[in-house]
Image (cartoon, rainbow, N blue to C red):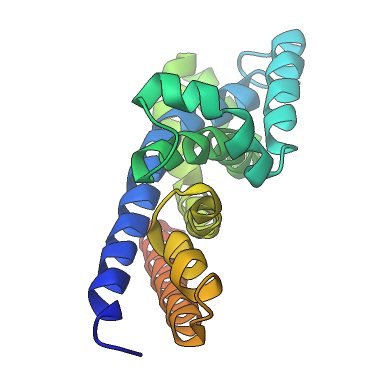
Amino acid sequence: MSSDMLPLLLKALGETVYMVAVSMVIATLLGIPLGVLLHITSKGQILESLSLNRVIGAIVNAIRSIPFIILMVAIIPFTRLLVGTSIGTTAAMVPLVIASIPFIGRQVETSLKEVPYGVVEAALSMGATPMQIIWRVLLPEAMPSITAQLTTVIIALVGESAMAGAIGGGGLGDLAIRYGYQRFRLDVMIATVVILIVLIQLVQFAGNTLARHLNKR
């Protein structure tokens, strides 16, 4: 691979990390409360509301059922309205966040279901409020599992950020398409794939390590 490609690879890697990191932070801040809401309003939980749970669940399932490439194209007007453009790394973060919020919500809901209900009952018997149960019982008990689930979401985001390159989203995906595919540069294609593999391996290692550290059992 020619030396002129190295700066482009580093720039593309930086764009990918930027997209994934910012998108993940925003999606996590919104997705975790969504997952908590899905869990506590389900049958037999502390704030049971089956009608609300069904409505939220239907919306979450609807968004999750849309393929990411279609979602990116479908919300271009919204993306342009929100950030002023439909191309580039900042624009790509809009569909990344929208796709990740329901994904995180379902993952968090799954993790919270693993918390033994006896722990919740014990907190209720001591007069704990719903918010106290959420903050002091459910989230701390489920945190190792939530961390592992969020690691999975980050890995999915890396793949989706590469897919965003198909419509000018920047990052490694954009570099692979413009320089690798369109210019028949096999070396560029291989380099981007290798970088993505290494990035995912690092994310998985960090996520597994943090989950083990948080697991006090």
